[in-house]
Length: 202
Image (tube, rainbow, N blue to C red; front, side):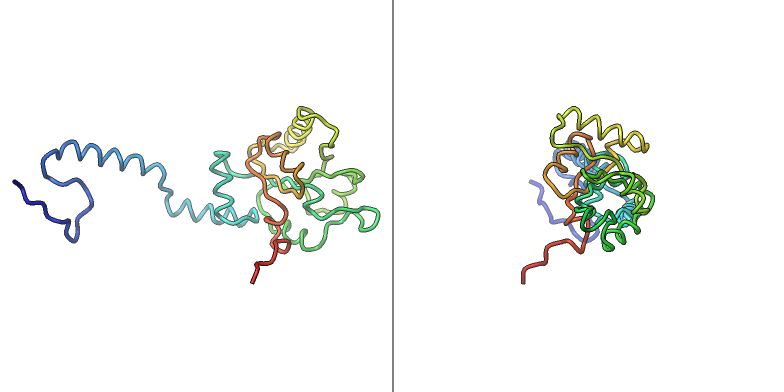
């Protein structure tokens, strides 16, 4: 009967040479192959950390969106609510300075907006040059298919496919745009804009 010894220093964790060695070797290599495709090289991680910062996101959030869509994120689609443009009659159509400053840091991605009535896309775009384009947001009265068509047409007009966009909203209705557009993901304005995050309880 062969006496088994514990793996010593320098042991690579591979199969032992006891009886059944061939089968264990096969299973060990098979397990290794399953793990290897999931291993992300350090250089790739660094590139993705940088890309997340360019989009104004933390790495974990960006990585989850990228994994879901299978592609890089090429645009951010904000609602006028998310941008803090809420009352054109009292506050005008210019977004608050903190939101503008965050958008100014976004790199290599389209900064798009969909505005709710009575806001007008042309006026919002003119007053906020940090935006690349603005359009009319889907209305509550629109059907699901009409909402989808409106969103798809807007994305197509600006040469960004839906699955490469992340929607940043501030209302349940706006979160529904994610499914209608088949977008890469959704972020609430409170998560995307650091200054709007709820304070941590002491």
